[in-house]
Every structure is written in structure tokens, then in C-alpha cells.
Length: 415
Image (cartoon, rainbow, N blue to C red; front, top):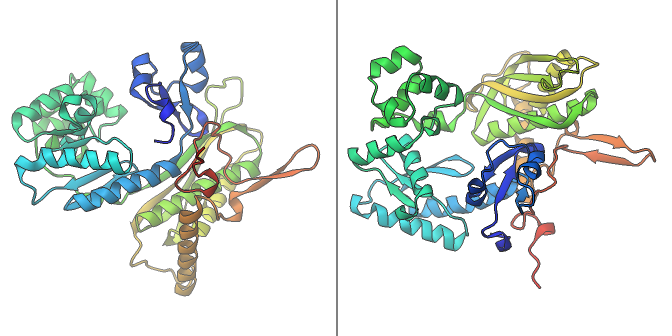
């Protein structure tokens, strides 16, 4: 949208800390760039190729997809936002013979008003709709909108879809299914229900099988409210300093608390894990995870960060060089009503923290993420000349694009 000079060039987006490739344009895929390729190997594997490289930029992605959702809100009778770039829409009241026309119209409007291409899949349930959207993205003949509205189309789509691309089937289950002879979605759908139950004994796998066979069984409530939330990242280098590690853990805990508030829920357990670099066999290795229970379930940044740092104090061991850390919040429930504890914070204190978080969230939405942070999310380093520099979230993003729609400093300049 903001770099038309890149049209037709291979483009890749890197993971946090600019580690490896996590997204590729069609041109990059045709070159043979694989997902998960470390950034430093691109120049080795594709010498002389002009590959455009970008760091992840969730602030920009979130703002632009928010514009897409605002159009969907106007065009669809009902919708449910599933992730940063996905929505499920419910098209009750639209005649079946008008669905293709409706989908093509939505694509044209989003492309005209926002500038982003979208792919639309229409089907009796969420799993089939996601397969249809993959077909719409891959084949131009669908005109960005693919409909699975009869059993013949369903079976054709399932035969085309590799088992690892089915929504809800992770890497571990995909490997097991392939070992059992299920290489496509149709292979799984063709098995008997009893075989699925006996082989996996898993409600989610059974629901996937049901949806592949045309039933609508995945409830919105389970998608909307996660049962646990994890924020973790590998560090740019390796960290031996405890204060630097505390800063990273505080940032991850603050992000977990923010995600809890976004889905209007609270957590009663906070866990922290740390580990060294398993690929550095020349270094001493260490891994640990512990958790703590909160007397009163909360989504307060202050309380979640405090709990996470207390756990880190228990598991941190001097002498190791740490490569990754993470925070997990568990035992998640709706934020109302919350049962308080006699020996914990009073109801008045809880309300005060809730109001504080609301103000901080509003400021960060208006002025950019991490405009306001708690003190534990920052640490200060001094160079050899005594000059101090503050780091709020030491993540490497050397190739991050600007944010011209959310930051005045990045606003587009015209000649």
C-alpha cells in the first residue's frame, strides 16, 4: 500500500528479533524461499537476488485490518473477529444465488477503500470456510470468493487440501495422521467417527472431523475466550544479566495482561519459563518452569507483572546464558463477577487498578503501543562514557516499516 515500488518483487517478513521468515509474497514462494528460513541464510541461498525484507509490525497490521473489519461490519449481517487478519461472517438473510456477487462486491470495496486484497470462503461451517478461502487465494478463477455449497464441491476441496493445512490440526497431529495414511482432508473425513474417537480421544479432533463432513459444531465462545495465553520470544542474543531478563519477562507479562483485558477475562495462575540455547552444546544448559496462584483472579498489568517477576526470582540461576523466556497466564475466567479473597486486595483497590488499566490502554491505543508502561518494563544501560540509554522492549526490528496511519512522526511526505 505504501511502497508501490515493491510491486512484483519478492518480499519476506521476519519473526520477532528478525530471526526467520514467517511470511512470503507469491514471488518469494516461487523463488523457493521456505517458511522458517533464518534471515542470515537468505543471502547465502539466493545470492544476487533483490529480496525485500521487513520486520514484523503488528501496530500497522492491526490498524489496517481494523479498517477492513469496519467495512465487514457494514456489509455482513453478523460477524466475529477471530484474529488480527481473520473474520467469520454470518450471512443469514442473503439469498444463496447472491452469495458469489456479495463476496466479489466485498473484495472490490475493501480493495478500493483500504487497499488490501482479501480472500473470502463461504461454506456451511468455519473449517470448510477456511479451506474455501485458501482456494480463493490460490486460484484467480474464483475472483477472490470461493463457495462450498454442495457435497461435490466439498469433496473436491477436501481432496485438494493437505492435512497439515486443515484448521485445528497442528504439526504433531498432522504427522500422526500422515503416518496413519491421512494425507489430505478428504482422507480424514472419509474415516468413521468411531475411528477418530478411538485413535485420538480428543474432542477438538472429533469436531474437526464433523466439520469436514459438513456439520457446524465449533462454538464461537471457545474461539473468543482462550483458556490460556502465552507470550514468549527468543532474545536477539543471549542474556546472562538478571535485570535484563526481568525486563523481558515484565514485557511479556504486561502483554498477557493486555490480552486478558481484550477478551474481558481474568486469570488466577501466572507461570514463567526460561531456557538456554539448546543448539549451543558448548555452553551449560538449563530449563525451568514454575507458576504461582493469585488469591484474586486479575487482568491488572501491575499484578500480573509482579507475580511473573516473583516466579522469575525463584527459577533464575546465575551463570547461564539464557536464549528465551515466556509468561503464561492460565485458569482464565470471565472478568465479571470476580470472587475476591479476604486476605487479598479490597474491592475498592481492584476497581482502582481496573480504572488505571483502562486509562493506560486508551493512551496506548491513541499514541502507539508502549507509550505508557510500568517501571519494570524498562531498564537502563550505560555506555563506556557514562551515557545512559533506556530500553523499553529490547526486540530487534531493523527492517520494520513505518506506521503512517498511527504515528505523526511516520506520516507520508509528498514531493
